[in-house]
Image (cartoon, rainbow, N blue to C red; front, side):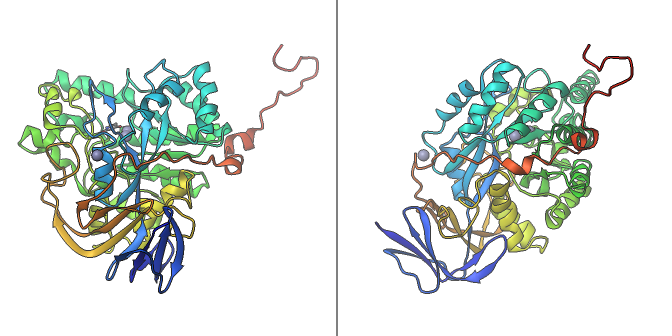
Length: 484
Ligand code: DUC
Ligand code: ZN
Ligand code: ZN
Ligand code: ZN
């Protein structure tokens, strides 16, 4: 069995920073300590050895808004590895009426060419007996997180009764509920009004989804999750209004996590007023980019621990696909890329500016995600026995981000022209060296499905509503108890 030694680096985890070598055998970390040697040596002099990034939120080859997102599990996972991300968690999306197991089969079939490991969240896009019963089978297969869309009315959106039923079931099964929190009814109404007033351009996309629609839905999801007794993970938290709700819930002891995207942290709503239609439309995603006040709130949340993870919601569309929305902003496919850029941009804008420590960087790009999603310490850790999903990070390496030469299949990059300092020297996927200073040596089909654990006991004590009301009928003299 051949072994690989990463020598002379500084290990950086969510908790610790120390000098040690890492020995890899059979795709796993076999030893950590001084003076380790292997059949192959990777020189980490001047570099940090960190757990590979985990992107908890991607949409590869997803059917959406009349088309498919342009990156599949081939180009998408190559983009991930190129930027130091060694695992992605994508979404299996049943069309309303379709069974969860049938949808999972379809998504399984997309992954044959994956270059890095992956898992899925299962979306609940409708409610019925079949969904209720198949949720248990999905958890048995290691998919323990269920996504709900409170927006995309008429397509993916579920109403509050469905949310409550599904959240309750997820809680029972020891899983966690995910929400896309925007008030879909209000978005639909605002969109119709804007179009009627002649606001058809990409700037109207942002006007149709103000922070209030996200703040309202986030508050609502938190309250429903509390009544259902389920931990809640709020995807793409983009504004103070949503962050405030999450902060308050966490302070009250509720299991609620928020996930800002790298795009929302560094790009603002001025992008939608750019005179070039293509430039603006390429940045249309939901929720939209916000102004600086909201960005500051997100950065503060990451430092304070009220926000837990940084993702991309990578859902890339080509310029040609975006142009279906000329004349009607509601038809611009929603989504942006970022898989290759999340780690370098967050390092540059977070660690490089002093807003995050290197350990916090590891926490929000990897370790917290692995813990919340039930795959720690197999992923997200530098520990003996963990998968050797590692990034040897050169904090001094620099480049200017450009669409040219990127792994993503699209023809532009929303971070075009941005200078980053901090890049991977080596990226390892279960011990296989997939990237060396920007040169790819990843293997198509190397990526494997990662089964995750339910949260079990942690879920039981959750519902403050059940604990307070302990519902039971009141006996009254001469009148039968309820139910008669
Ligand atoms: N938002 C996007 O911008 N794209 C995919 C789905 C979503 O919620
Ligand atoms: Zn979403
Ligand atoms: Zn998404
Ligand atoms: Zn390939």
